[in-house]
Length: 117
Image (cartoon, rainbow, N blue to C red; front, side):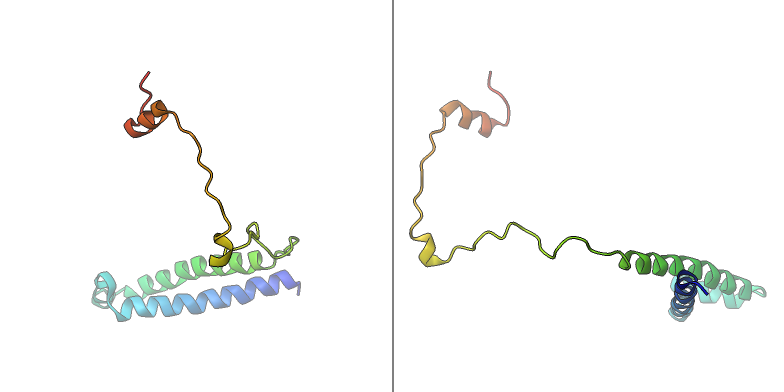
């Protein structure tokens, strides 16, 4: 059997297990009075079967998607950021503030939030 088919079957089994747990929790906690509705109906077993089946489809698809995306090879070396040095207190003492002149109209425009012209 091909590896991809085995991967898919494995993820369907995992999805079915997750679905069974999810449906059991839904009925156990009586979310939206589902347990009351299912036990009060003579064909409630069909609702449980549909809940289980459709949740199995959803959980299996998500599980398979996660498994396939984890198979991707990372061609880039590990890293991130610019690797700038972090300034310590003794290093910051040597820095000099450089004043930058700003025209008064620029400041007024920024404070008003619009162009005064």
